[in-house]
Length: 265
Image (cartoon, rainbow, N blue to C red; front, side, top):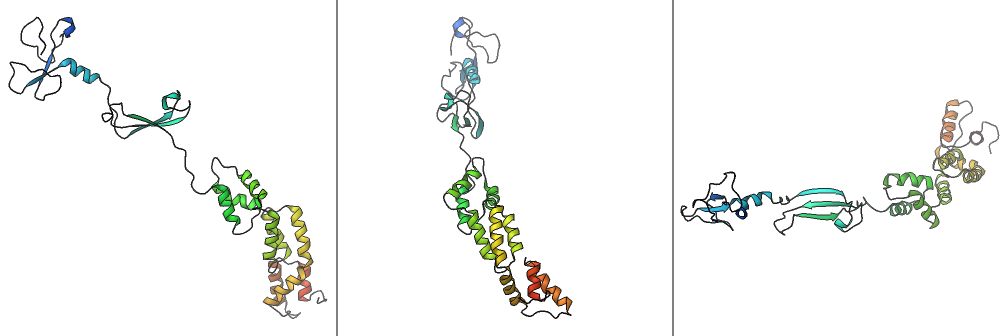
């Protein structure tokens, strides 16, 4: 206990108007039971009772609060050097228990970039092309749902064409090869245009298909019917004609096969 020039008994805790030791006044003492560093025991107090300087209590109350575990603050660093990066970089501050390391408890870490949802755009495209051919426009539509902020779809398609993975001409040839035995020229040409094949290339393939239209239509008809309808049976004739027209074969070819024009072949 600090003694001044006044009465021998210290003033009670909480009384206002007490001066600090430096001013020659009395130091107020808080009475309590728990012992702590810096406490002063009153000679006349009961056994076990200790007194703590009120200046120490005020200093403790004015000390900055330690960080709370689990609190997070995000922002953008304007000073740059504060977090060891450049001005404007995003950061995340995680406040923990400052009593463990003697600091305020704030730990600044740079914000991590967002992870991709899966393979790169080019890897997905190569996976598609390894299973079958695609036209450029068709592949672009298929990849559109996988494009992310840092992707350049047109550049990926250009790279695939330059490296030989993507070829619209090769796709068109493949489609004609798959469809020619079962479909007519009109239906194949319609699909080529829907897939984005250039009109000049479509025109060339159309000429080649027209040159073999009758033979292909005849093979399809023989496999399904194999016998011409009687001239009086208009219903049977209409059924066979609708079937061939639905496959995309030309009307003049259908008339030749069914014999309506009079020349069988």
